[in-house]
Image (cartoon, rainbow, N blue to C red; front, side):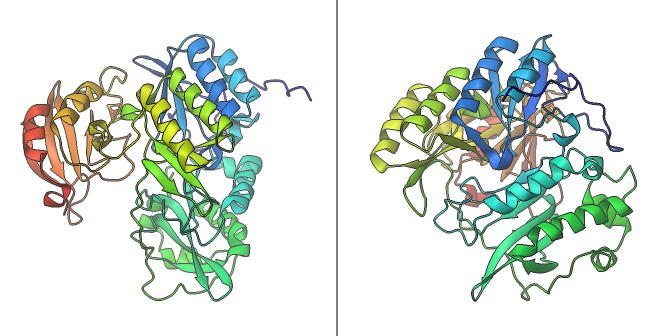
Length: 441
Ligand code: SF4
């Protein structure tokens, strides 16, 4: 069947909460050219879609592809042919043909949803229903492009610390699966405000989103902003769905599963790899696609750790895949020096950047022996848009090559407690060259 025609090259912002963030239909200018964000359904990227993204990055941009911390992809350095790029991506099935439906597709799953060895509930069917609801319900297009939902199936591999406007987390009671839920927070920190049978998950999501839109002003883009002015108990009372109390004191316990290297599925194994500092070349993406097609199930899963998982490999195939991907410069094990650091785009690509965080991260990583992936985050301005949760250590730029060092502290909001100011990457490296338990509070 031929593709439907492109409705328009740029979206009209129908939302009363317009966004400046990139989307598939909204290519945003940056210092290094345009940025297009491709929102992947539950992080899923088919091999042929990966190849389409690689080709798009070469044909319409400068060849830089980024894995984001919401398990999406971005193409950077886009030139003048926006309509050509958008049509190329739509033809690969990488977004809805209605621009208004793209922004709101913010649903995070475990990267191993449906496959994880520890999962209590396969979230994929419900996730498909939620995404369909978001994409096809015009009223929900009034949500901000940042409004986000998490659906957690109790998997071992799960990011539990990214704040979401609504989160749901599976528990089992006898033969029944329930979904505990919370607002403006994350499963790791709770509290759970109630629970519904899993079959009622879609009704709960619809009720919460509609309840938000009924009450929020245009200036209130996120649930935390609404709940700062409106009591959460009243919000819950007004929901059009019935729910039960969550078990007293319930907390989602993290399994702290690594996301690099060989990962356990309930059948077979998966391989987690990461592009250095979140940046993929077209060659890396093609190598991943080729392995997924040859040995896996033909799909890739993006993760909130800016990494990629190839599911459903046999163990000996995982070993061969590591060799092939390491040759492309991918990080395949947690002890790789660059796995310790994350960095935002920085001054080389972002006009807000005060320092070249990508280059400084390479300098820093060579000095560190922490052995903890993602232990140090470098941010070139206070927006910290490349880290949705607080890293154990954050280097916040104050001028080119100079940073303030913060150590995570649950008692201190923001990046944590200020440990030292005006450090070079080398000076920060000397201070941080300790196991993370010495500086993570
Ligand atoms: S954190 Fe600041 S400098 Fe870094 S990419 Fe985001 S806006 Fe740009």
